[in-house]
Image 1 (spheres, one colour):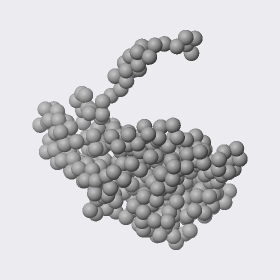
Image 2 (tube, rainbow, N blue to C red; image 1 turned 180 degrees about the horizontal axis):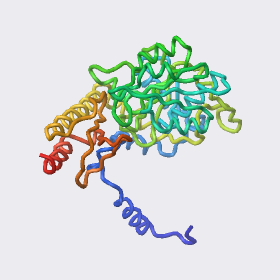
Image 3 (cartoon, rainbow, N blue to C red; image 1 turned 45 degrees about the vertical axis):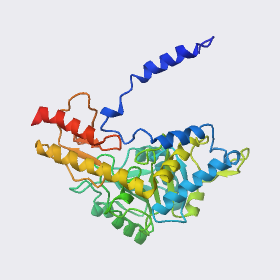
Length: 365
């Protein structure tokens, strides 16, 4: 640490130089995050000093967190649902497995999930001493229900389905998983970190939410398609009793119990997430999502016109193709099977799609 502080101009010159090393979203085609909506930035700034880790000191901010939970619970067909704002899908998934382990009371509990599940479940399994059982996908990169049946045993404490897989943009057969979970009395978690703010705004989409009676919890990340500031996730549960299994005494705070994983929690991103939903409403969100899906379809058509085939037809705005070379300055990613992966986020607008296709056309047309 410096003994003597530096001048503000010098400090921000240094910081700006470092910021210039970051990539521009204009060339990033692989991120599930996007520049935050201006309304989110304004709301975040207004609440930047708030700490939801001690909600009694910030009752206004805490009430907005509750309103965010109510809005999303209603969107996911459970108006009386409960939950709290997390730092994102990783925290939400860890918390869900804590709940499932607590409820099942097995000596050697296991979790059955698809091979496409986010790597946060591996972290959670390591932390909680849970056996993680990935099962195969079908030809369309969705969880194979027969493989799920084969993997379940008396020690299975949780089933996990994905609504908008990170790599291929697919929705697992949540309806079938719901039936299995209901029949066997197993906790079912839906990781909708990405698809949760896409699927409700599509004219037709696979069922994934609390309208299915076997679904116990849902994770959604407003800092993805919700265009909030980072970090902003939400964990939603059907049952308050399940949420309360996480409760821990907090004797020196303004509230005497909390069920969150982190202690100090920034209020800014939480209010930013709510602000975007309130500002856009369902009509505005539908317009954003429809635009992203239109660009996804245009990208598929353009790539296939050059003979570059899609791997599967995605349910959401994540699309994969057979492996090819990509020209600079475009930044894409690759699935574990080596397929080219592009996410058509709000910043990947029609002009960017056409510019990318033009560059690809120069190489492959």
